[in-house]
Amino acid sequence: MKLFKLLAVVCVVLVASPFPSPARAAETAKATAAARAVAETFYAGYIAVVEANKEASSFVAASNLVTEAFKKRYAKAMRSMDVDVDPVLVAQYVPEAPFKAGKAVIKGDRATVVLTAAASAGKHQVTVTLVSVAGSWKIDSVR
Image (cartoon, rainbow, N blue to C red; front, side):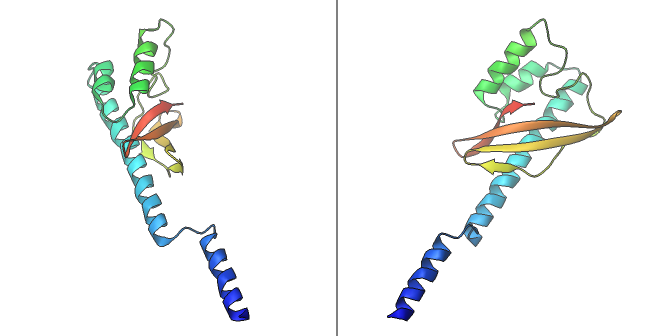
């Protein structure tokens, strides 16, 4: 009987353990990679449009990598007379190197990714918040 109680306690401890199961760890790694990929892909496309002197507003409006709320905030910012920095780059210039995503931090249906690019004054960083929409990560805000 004592062995049964001990086994029951061990099972409870294992189930309540803060360590993720291998399946959960793989799921988290996949979600992290997906969030990073969305951020890097969007920024690479955005920078290509800006450097080609094309209309960035059209790129953002057509992108399936950003939320509808992001599109609305971007359009509003671009219509504002007080725009002194690009709302996606959070700068007045385009960095010399592509943005590279750091580790994604995922909490529920939200992820935060810091993107870093080389700039003339050192490195330039933006923090991107993504949300999970129908199983896909989409950029929702930039700071």
